[in-house]
Image 1: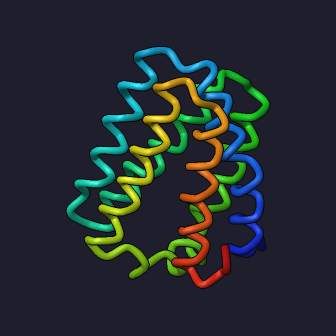
Image 2: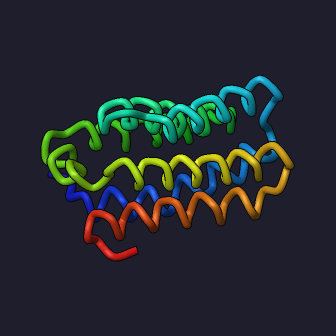
Length: 140
């Protein structure tokens, strides 16, 4: 069984790179979709709704990179995150104010992608995931 700490270690290595490449390769339709998903994650009325938009947001970044192998790695990570142990760990870590803050972090990633700033997109995603790691008590 993969631990949440192991998942976050891998996410911290993979997803910032995906965001960097998304800033290079994103089409306007990708940016629009990412912005919509980020706004919906910020406005989520429940943890379950946040989770739905958060997952869609991170997946769209992986798709925007347009690299099938990186997408397959992302999908493997997502499959592990769907485990019940991971879901229990996340419960209660995202009250309303935290969901707003996380949504704002998503919007910062989108802004960097939209403005074609790969290094900033990578840094914003790394900061976002490090914050999640701290929320879960895993360091970061």
